Amino acid sequence: MPAPTHIAGQQFGRLTVSGPSDVRIFGGRTVFCQCRCGGSISVRPGDLRKGKVKSCGCYRRELALAALQRANQPEARSRQLVSANRTRHRKQILALGAVTTTRQYIDGQPAPL
Image: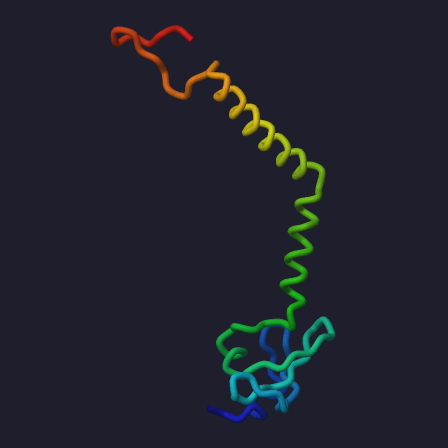
């Protein structure tokens, strides 16, 4: 396995390797990386090469924030409410017995609804 100093200056995803780190992860060597967002992290070189680590965690936070913003948009909220209302009303109607999910047959002919 090459020494972590050989990958100094290389970029993996949003991370740029600065050099070796004193931190040990599972007893293995690590490298110190600077993220594009300004954060820093110590990572095993193998995890960088395999693509397991691509940022300091900022990318995951960005994705979570974007999903939250999409969920709070008015059109998304109305879709959620319409879906919830449909389910609630369907359950209420089925509980009353006014509508059946299967069609009734009388003498092989469909019964009037």
